[in-house]
Length: 125
Image 1 (cartoon, one colour):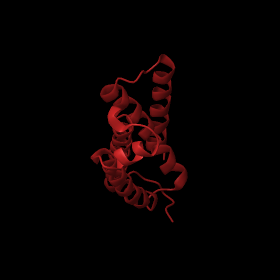
Image 2: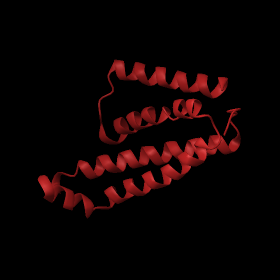
Image 3: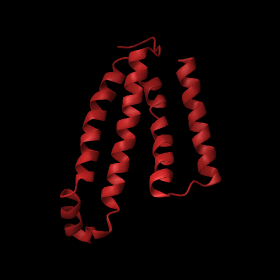
Image 4: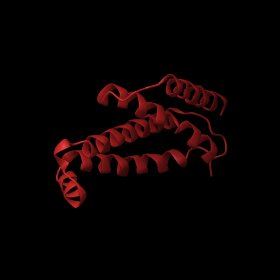
């Protein structure tokens, strides 16, 4: 079981892979769910299942799961879960850039606080 919690190159690499895969998966799911041609009810699910965005999201989540397990093997859970919080920031920023989603001043303040927390946990161990 990990006790030290030091941020090695491997830990940083797994962290980055996790952030990229989680963000890409979330964006792919959003793209699948936002398809205006999807229809309603069960037809919507069938339409989404026939599109690559849904499957891209699922693939990203499977790969992220593997990266996350490796990440957890190297850090204490209390540190890993806090470092993983940066995924929220990445998804919010990407949602703004790719989907034009609104970032209110309170959301920006939240992004800054989460980022500060991740920096403190990352540096402080």
